[in-house]
Image (cartoon, rainbow, N blue to C red):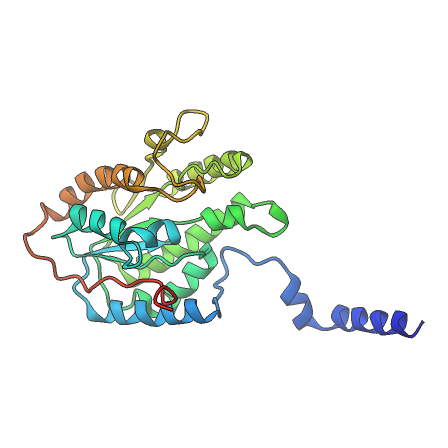
Length: 264
C-alpha cells in the first residue's frame, strides 16, 4: 500500500509540473533542439571552427548521409568527395543522427554565420522518419521544419542558391516510403527553380516501387555506398558548374572534420 501511494504521488507531481510535461511532449521539427551528448557538442565546436575559417563556396548540410561523404573517418568516401568537388571550395557540415530540429538548432547557433557560401546543398529528414515518437512520422510537421531551416539559411546566407535534395529511398522499413514520397512532394513545392532548386535523384537510386538498385546502399539499406554518392555527385556537378563555373585547380575550403569519437 505504501508503494501505491508513492507511485500516485509521483504521477500527480508529473501532472502538475510543466517541466515534466514538456519533457514527455513530442518534439516538433520546426522547434530548434540541441543535442547534449558529448560527441554532438564536440562536433558542433569543430564545425564552428570550420565555419570561422572561411573560404567556403559550397556548404553541405544534413545528417549522417551528408556527413559521411566528406568526413575523415570515411576515407573512401572522402576521396570520392575530393574527386568530385575539388576546386569548388566545398565543406561538409552534416552531423550523424541529426533530425531537422537538431540541424535547425546548429544553424541558429552560428554554424552558418559569416560563411556566405554561394551554394548550399541540403539533404535531411531521414531521421525524423525513422525515429519519430511512437514510430509514426508526421510529414506536415517535417515540412514545417524544412521551411524553418530554409528561412534561416536565406537569412544567414542571402546570396546562396539552395539545392534542396529529396530524401533518399530507404529499404530498412518499406512502410516509410509513402512518407518519404509525401515529404518530397512538399519539398518540390518549396522550390522556385532559382534561389531554391529541388533535386530528386531517387529514380536513379531505386525503381518506381522504391526498391533500391543493387550496390547503391550499404547493408543497412539506408546509407549510400560509393556508387550511390557518385549518382548524387553526377546530378550536382552540372548545377555547380552553372552557378560557379568549372572547378578551379586549387581549393581553399577548410580541412574536413570527422567523428570526435573515431579516434577513441
